[in-house]
Image (tube, rainbow, N blue to C red):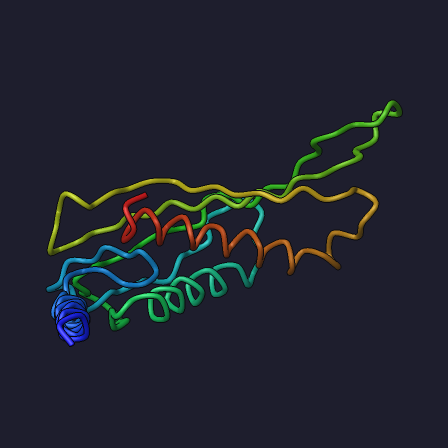
Length: 170
């Protein structure tokens, strides 16, 4: 009987501690100040010399969706407790492997963004940084037929990088 009561007491204590801890933690590993309730994410204008016309919208919407789905923050239009502004600074394609005939065997699509993150609740977390990701693909492939999937993969990684830097502190 004492063993049952002891086990029950441990279970209740564990339950109380896990439900009472409402600090800035989520199951995604995000560490957000408890008093931060909102995040504003501005559209990322495209200043790259080579422009993908959909990239700005894909990146901006993806960033908003990531923070909305992976945190308890409400996404607002402006003046959030956390604020992300950025721009697309690069969209380049270059050969990465050359055959003996001086032909490109592999190409690399690289997307670079510059991000300014402001945390009004913890100014020490503020940063301004560039992030860059790429995908290599065979030059035998028609770029226009694979461009959308390459962009999606790269954008997902960029969003993850920004998310981790801003609220996971990796």
